[in-house]
Length: 323
Image (cartoon, rainbow, N blue to C red; front, side, top):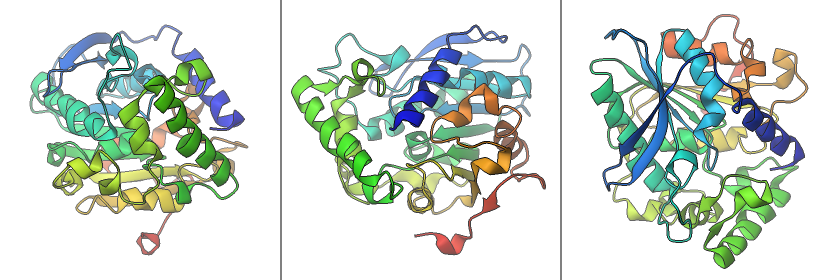
């Protein structure tokens, strides 16, 4: 994460310290292994079986509060919304990070799956949609109940294969995330990202998954523990949004993850910052309220209709570019 990306994440963190105009309710939900997960719900007063409920999956080691403004925006546009923290992060952080056993696969197969079950229980009969940022898009394919997802929007979603990083940033990012981060984790027992000003503190198992330099998710340490990856369960209409100045979300990186969603109806939308009158957007800024009038309507419209509006900025990436 370079200066621009760090600055964007810090701006987003400062935004979420402000009180939202919409009241959100905290909750705790046990995963299948009894780990207690924390999050927040935006719920309309009267139930409506036609009203979609949106689950927002965060990026790796980004607190769910980063997405509060976006959640409030969706709520104001007729959705019920669930945001939550993966085990080890934010509302789901234990007293000791050193002894926490948690991986990317746990975040998807256990934590996201728990949110799918919660959505079914708390919002019976309502359509279930998902928004996934960065690894959160990958997590959307790791839940066993993925078949219940109606529509999926991902933003910069990939699983950090180093050769997919933008060429101008690749070696710096490789050194930071694939050499330095695992070395610090080996010494500390977890990655103290908060102390370094990079990310939230991160479980060692997640660091191992992220830093392993293989192009296949099933060859990441926790991916090897799954007999069958459940991505094919997802049959949703899926929109993958990527931003051209996002060094993580390059076209090869986005397409690498999309290829796992064999049965989804996939659209990849590539946006240049200049398409929306900006000089830069990067990996984290999509969910800042500054983009409420330009980027957020793209996700909202897809969740509402499963289609792109005729005036949507950017261009569709042809499926022929898929890996």
